[in-house]
Amino acid sequence: MKLIEKLVESKVIFKFDGFSLNKDTVIMPNGNIKERTYLSHPGGVAILAINEKNEIAIVNQYRNSIKMITKEIPAGKTDKDPLESDIDAAKRELREETGYIAKDISYLGKTYPSAGILDEKLEMFFARNLIKDEMDLDDDEFINIEWIHTSKFEEMIKEKIIIDTKSICAYFMAKLNNLI
Image: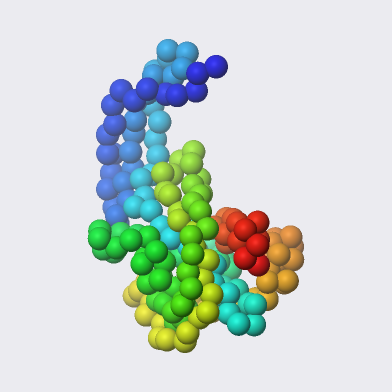
């Protein structure tokens, strides 16, 4: 069975804060015409950072969209500088949100957090050999840093304490690659 939808037209419905709401008109594999609406995102990076005690850096922050405080690995958008590489964005976000610089940082892979309604591509990195520096939070970021031992991290996923998709995905990508 064919799965590809053929794009007929794409419109930006609304733009805001670096995002846009888009509506595409497509021809379905069966020939029917359908409209697809999705949010366009500039892309992001996420960093699974582990210190010398085998603890993972966790950012605790309030997420208005779900009205709760979440436990997440450091992450951020890649739209601050068009010339910035993904690995440089990961280094920047790690320092901004945790106050640490990684001597060693490697690529884990990518994920699309909610491909049905969002085109965000999230590049994930693994960082170790951390050096203390200064935090440099954005003016709309209010976070607390917590360090969770790798042995406890997986248990917190199992207990549904860590529910953030990028954090779970990066952890298991690192584990599957024998980094944890």
